[in-house]
Amino acid sequence: MAKAIPLDLGYRARAWKRLAEREFDVLIIGGGVTGTGAALDAATRGLSVALVEQRDFASGTSSRSSKLMHGGLRYLEQMDFGLVREALKERELALTRLSPHLVRPVPFLYPLTNRGWERPYVTAGLTLYDNMGGARSVPGHRQLTRHGALRLVPAMRKDALTGALLYFDAQMDDARHTLTLARTAAAYGASVLNSAQVVGMTKAGERIVGASVEDVETGSRAEVRARVIVNCTGVWTDDIQTLAGGRGRFHVRSSKGVHLVVPRDRINSEVGLILRTPTSVLFVIPWGTRWLIGTTDTDWNLDLAHPAASKADIDYILAHVNSVLTTPITHADIQGVFAGLRPLLAGEDETTSQLSREHAVARPQPGLISIAGGKYTTYRVMAADAIDAAREDIGPGVADSVTEHIPLLGADGYPALMNQLDRLSRKTELPVWRLQHLLGRYGSLVDELFELAAGDRTLWEPVPGAEDYLMVELLYGASHEGALHMDDLLARRTRASIETPSRGVDSARAVAELVAPALGWDENRTEREVEFYRARVEAELESQRAQDDREANAERTSARDARINITAGASIPS
Image (cartoon, rainbow, N blue to C red; front, side, top):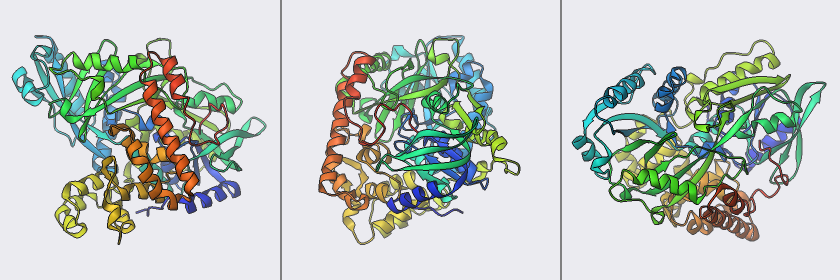
């Protein structure tokens, strides 16, 4: 079993030194789920690997998804059986072997609105859904009368359904899952770096042989040599292909998806909901003591790093969810809003909800592999396909992928710890519900938090303004999980930015003062980080009052990026 390595400032310095001094088999650009998955895949094949990410791990699409590990019912209706089967197999692997501490079952009610034909139609689909992925660790679907459905979801209007079916999928904290992939890759020998921007490619004739990488924190540069570069940048795929001097074999379009976060008591329900809309589906997803409601599916051609949710997006979601609720959700009920961009393979159809969620891998020129499309759930398959494609540049003898058999850090020992909650509660003097929260985020890595907080009970205190989290978790984010800025800590290491009424602002100063020694911040830097975070939140709130995308984008991008050394005007993140 690989041993976890703290991604602290010392690790960062050593990783930067390795970038400049050695040649890697594989250099991966992009620290989202596909890039971190590819780093783990390559490292566990015995290859030397470096991964660079311009901002933070999962700072793009991979922290702004619906947070579902699922097959995708709408793809089943589109007859995309291969994608659904593949995704359901991956869901099962995640639940049982790879990341059972991070992924858990979640129930959904599928309301029926037509008598007669709809129940057998949906039943046939869910029967396929239950059986397509092979072994199954979640319950099969159940038939419900209208009365039975309303017992589970009293919040629904009686005239909004004639009956229902109950089925199960799975969910996870996407940012934490992606971060754990990055840490697992590092444990198997990969050098993983955030705040590392690719600013140029090195060529030998037409072959790509390396890249110039800039440290966004210091401005220093390293010339990185690699046998092959794997472009895992999602919605920035075309930009990296252009930077390499080629046109690429495919193009990617960005589809914006917006989600709202509301308190759990605003919708009286024991289960989630899936609702049909004219163009897609809308989920109401249980999320701890809250609900996630989304999503939208619209073209986005503005700033890729900071997609903005407009008032029109929010009104669209509210209109659709309120059409079935007895007590409408209002703007005042919303605690958080987030917008993410899906990288869709461009096609002829102008409707983004119909663009392909299949992934594609190409070798646009020697030494460069690009992968795009796909969905979060199938990240492991995408990663394996990308490294398989890289064999042509790496040379003979590359082993097959083994990630189907590699648990992520924290998975080993997790079931035993869950069985020992009472003993752990007595030992740590923490309530069982706190320990369940910690185990569901860190698994067996929770021992590292116990060690970090040894002798300092103040670290077990709740975070001011974000009481679901403990101070030790924020310190651990800085000392072990590679966080370098306040938004890393409050938007991704925790989800305070979308889960609290202040969007994390009420927590910022206490957290900044806590992590300052671990991150080497003086008083001025600490103050600056707090102000950067406050300005980011204010800009997001203003964007959500804007009527359309262009106005919302202008408001959101008015806040300066905390990573102030990112090349001005750059549209190419790594």
